[in-house]
Image (cartoon, rainbow, N blue to C red; front, side, top):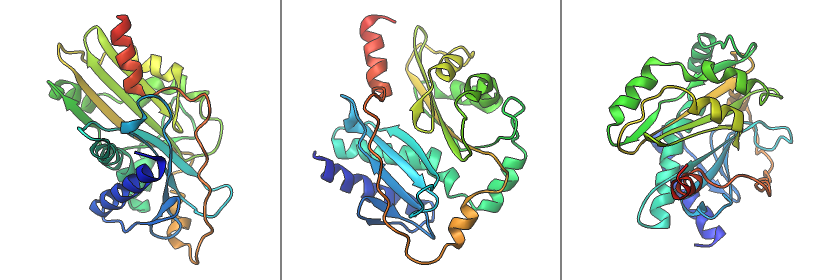
Length: 263
């Protein structure tokens, strides 16, 4: 599947999944436009396992040069590349987009109660965790009873160099003796935060199980989408930035390599 065909498949899936969340989006060139000045941008995911990966950026103020873009990546499984992409977009919509399209007043109330002592000035809104695999109830129960982000705060502090909003994606799981933990901040892997996540005592079972969750960090309780929702007029097209040349390979490729080398 070529880049343009992949883009078309991903955009169709974004429209479908946003509709499930009650949002009307439509493809427009390189982006999928939503209400007001919001949009979803797509960029190619590099690496040898990119077929089932999507890199999606939720744009808050389309057409502004300094528009905040909340990037996140997701992986999907399936028999065909189209099925993998559809499942990846569905995973992104479930854990990430569900937070980003939440009504601003509801998110403000939640963020106000989720100030982070280890990250002064920042507020967190966590989306639903997607837990899948064998025996996933044990990992789901652990996640329900633990606030993971405060435990990662010392490692995250150095990553938060600019104003919010910033997306933090956590992926953890595997099995005993063959686990994986990855934290992405603004779409990029944080090795320090990933190591801190791996050091936590989440349950490692005898069979494979994973969890994915997304946290939106803002510098103020007031959500920046208020201005976007009130925006009028046709915003200018947005140029989607390409991925950095040295971005890390996908998580599943790194996990498979770890299994081969016996890490």
